[in-house]
Image (cartoon, rainbow, N blue to C red; front, side, top):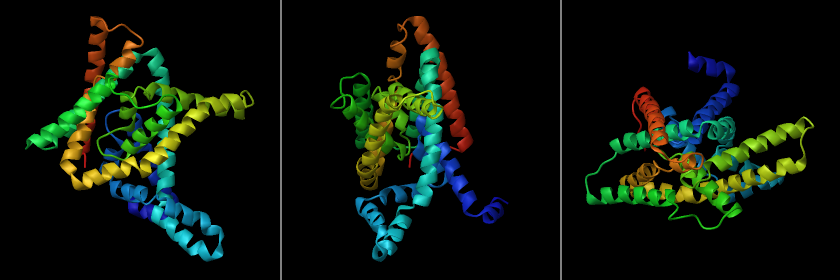
Length: 320
């Protein structure tokens, strides 16, 4: 029945379906726990996603830009097909829609109910690490070392022992590269990377402010300056993401192709080591007393139950 409907509606239905894929993937990546890459696997378009992303090369972009020349138009069309933009564009719009909606909710909840929000995130992260580790081997000492290395690295970053170089725009750019690269990797959520780097709430608030300022300006209640300030942060983050997609993501894919099990264990180790990272956000609003920690643990249980329920409904998650 679905196939017959798709045949009648043609390309419009196909675009809507891919947009819905983007909504699902963006929702997963905006929340630490299940990654967008895992959603892509579950919905059956992970292979196409990776093929399209790896086809985004400077050479093909130049071929497209040369399409104004009649002699080069054939190659430009071929490059467009190779990059699969008819898939990537609606997918990207769907992801941006989901991230924008969730960013607003995160910004509000981080101010009004930080314990509930970040306690829930702790549960999501911890449960996702358990679910993903369950499907990976620990047959050798190399397996254990790979997982331990990822866990240790995340713990050091969460404790601010290790930090990304630079600050301000440089840090936002690097955060964008790491987070958006993680978006296409099974098991690792882009939002998890941002929480680990301490940028999640800040970037969510900047995106929310940017969208609000655009709306105010369109209604005649805002100013250009009000749009530019948060907009600059968003643009720098996206620029970092574009660079990350064509660099960092390719490096990780190469590692997965050459040393699949060790790379996956390292990546899931990063998730495990990120479990305490949301506590920093709670500590910024409340002293970590016994009562606060108990309430956080209660919300963590809720988050873990939610993740385990999704895992059960999906028939299990596989990081690759």
